[in-house]
Length: 114
Length: 121
Image (cartoon, rainbow over all chains, first blue to last red; front, top):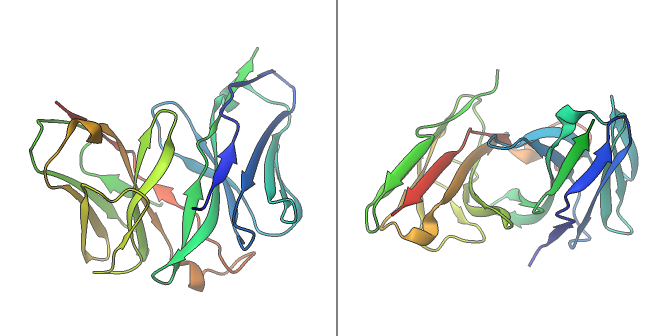
């Protein structure tokens, strides 16, 4: 059974701080990793994808991947109250019918307080 | 602009009823997915389709079936609704990964619909 693990939180950080969200995965052969943000009552939306070991930066967001440790993280710098949401880690872990199947973690709830 | 449309935002059905959840995407995507999302359990894959008329079971297919007769439409069917199928259902689509160009061999963002919240009484 493919697994993607996240701490459910909530993770509470003050406004302006760095929020660090972590995710581990079970399939050593995984190649693609995604972070989705989901506001309460809304659908998930992609905020970052990463495929190579190391860091990838996009504005206030940095994704970090370490395939040897099977670990992917998301850093949010200068956190804002509008970043308060659930963050879902997704990994393309399975293969069936000619396509990669994404497996989602259960999500980490982030609360940014003023 | 990318668009995945689910036919109903809220549905209330009775136990034993047949339920159809429709999903339409306008991006010419080959892959489509049905997930259910429950508190504390996250997103769980029910079925996916990698092409027209093709379908594969996900992690929790029991009690569900799907239909993909046209590329843009993927339907989820509950043959006989039960109370434990009360949930938020999310449809998603994705451009077929093998042909995606980009940073890696397995790229592929999922685009989600707004969700259908089903209550079975």
